[in-house]
Image (cartoon, rainbow, N blue to C red; front, top):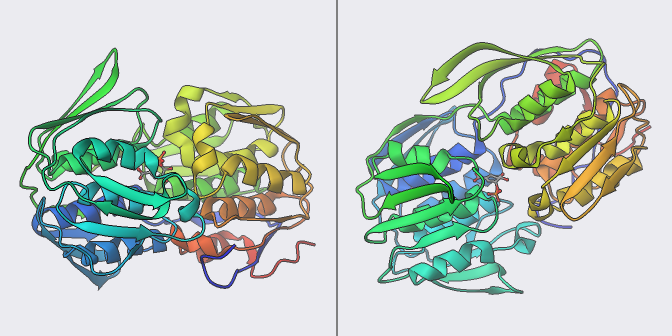
Length: 452
Ligand code: S3P
């Protein structure tokens, strides 16, 4: 597969204790939204702690192409001089969103109700992913789109010149779809209503309120009903991006399966719509504690302490928890292989349309390293081999998926033999400091693919 230049094979060797402090980068979801909402506000938004991964940098470039002034001040400090709701200019080049589904889907929503046309593309992974889930609701506003192969990128979006507000029930649990509709609703007159049956991450709702939009959220028998009043003047904000719980998952899970480990991961957002992995790990018997619990920028935050946990047990993860840990199933399956008993993960059909088909990608790599996996359309299960029981010694494909690559690197740390991936290049999309951070804790990561 192409898309990230020359593949970077990587091998993770079994290692001794992981110890120290893991300062993971800023939250990817909040970083994208900070740039996009900053570009739609009037005046200068200041952002600190922005994730400087490829996904977010592609969104920064896109916001420039739509007319916002985006400046990198160094050290994670950025500013965005916004053009106001409805103020986007028509880009004169194709918008390349790289590997990022969040980037492309949210930007499509943000431009969909302005009288401009834009063409979007991405890498080999993104160009396979379904976009109709976003363009279907955008069509209700009056937006037109033409894409490839049943709604795939490259795709051209013709924004609605005279948009009408919509009422839309999101058919799949997806914060990206919800957010695309809300961002489109910003430039439609009147009230746009989005209904979701299962709660998904609520950063868009929180941040829209922070930027001064009129937005209400009600829990009803129909589900969560979100009502946004269109055509607000968004006020620029000062945003401190919290550290990403989805990135924290890697040092946390690595510590749980690597003998003698004790790792502190400070300042992690524990928003209930994101924290499902940590609840699940604790139910499995992980020695994972929350220290210094506090509130920062309206979000619950804690320092996570993860210690080697030799007695974890596989459980059945409640399907209704899936949305709150959707990006964490790959690394959870690695922990499950180091627990005893069967780990059952149901209600996870969405895993099949992420950066890769994550059930298939993990099943292949786990099997190549001696772990038994069973799977159906919307579930999968992993047979635990007990702590340190994973044979390892296999080479896994990462399928242009950062989380698949990092999960297998974690697996090698606690396995009997090293584990390799064919391409660790995609890790730079969300966690550019993964290698130095993990080796700083004691991991043995090498840039080669010689597992034994
Ligand atoms: C995201 C939503 C999730 C998640 C992705 C980030 C977001 O995708 O997998 O990594 O920032 O809104 P879906 O909305 O497709 O579930």
